Length: 69
Ligand code: FES
Image (cartoon, rainbow, N blue to C red; front, side):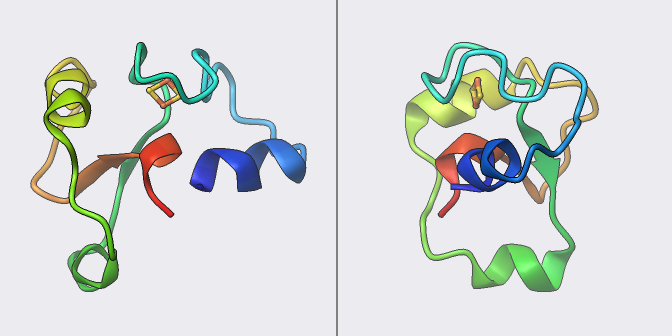
């Protein structure tokens, strides 16, 4: 997932991925460009959508990074 990539590459994103991919935070919120969003193979689950509702600055092309492969 995006979270793994960020962690494995020591990307310094303050607070990113606080719950380590267990769908209990929204710190991994990512806003995709529409063309990139359409290319994502997975659709968000209800659990992801619930957590996304809490994310700051939610958009139509928002996903949680830890849930996107
Ligand atoms: Fe917490 Fe993705 S890292 S929901």
